[in-house]
Length: 268
Image (cartoon, rainbow, N blue to C red; front, top):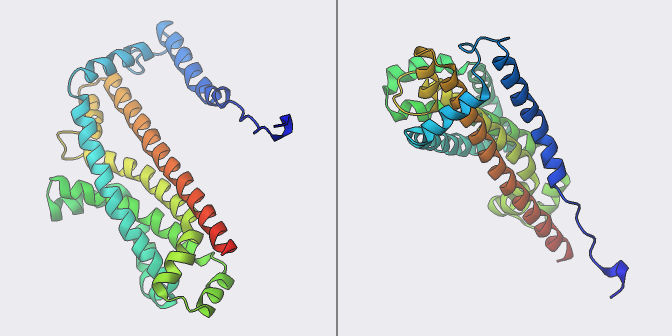
């Protein structure tokens, strides 16, 4: 085997990833120095080392209970909102008649802020888990719906016409043509919806919650503990990044499947 036939070595990714850590680490060092020098009052902005100590204390106590409660709510609300968003996106994207009936209503509901839903959901559903999951589902619905409709509308109509010429029925058309072509736009909506789910979670847990990261935020505010507030914010950021990374990995695998599937179809 010649040297030219050897597979090219992929460049290492660690230096690039370390670049992404440079700014957060620089901000941590800067904040530590500013607080230690007394330029910012400790009751307004605690030193990063104090926040880290608070995280360690929470990790030995109730932190995992709060993470479990918040993660369960986010996953349940996201799943419900994303599923409904996909169903309505397919309906509206494929039917101009459905768009005429539904789009004005959805456009109005989309403009309502998350906190405006809280009093109504509390009156209708009470202070239990149902109201919190419903609020998160509302937040997840609209990004999936909007991106799904756009993805379906942007599909090359020639592909649909060719598929119909070959006798594809509605189900086969959706599975073999519409779904593979719309996957990139759908995943864009799913990732946006997941981010909004974490935002809506905080709105849900700030009111009428006894567990969760939003409850930690509220508890830190009421007890004048900025270290607790910042610790909850850091955990929320890490969980948001982790869940988005998992969804991004799933997206890459689905897109690889789509490319392989399309190539197989072409050869056939």
